[in-house]
Image (cartoon, rainbow, N blue to C red; front, side):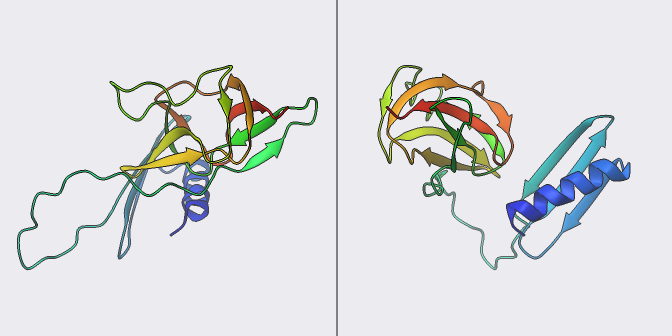
Length: 156
């Protein structure tokens, strides 16, 4: 099940008036709960049967996500960097680490702009453009939607 299908499922459940929907497939388990205007989605990998107890694994970050889609803003020369996935937006790699970027910072193609956590995987979002960060459109630790604007970049 890809992100687009999950988004469509969430929209369908929100419109249907159902208070809770659980979907369990071979590799994923999704629970969507609605309450009024709020929709809460929980997604996790389905349990896998093992013959032996697994060793304690250290948490790992996912490989960098595909670079964020970039779309020009019509009324000015700024480029909007948008979220490639649904998840939680983080401006720094860990609570005790410095921010990836600030307003006024110069960035180049391949620089990490933020992390978006999706299903307990931390996806580094890399810039597809060079320029200067003009505005950060999302607060740290906030949920973001697919294609939601995250940054304004001045390419000049």
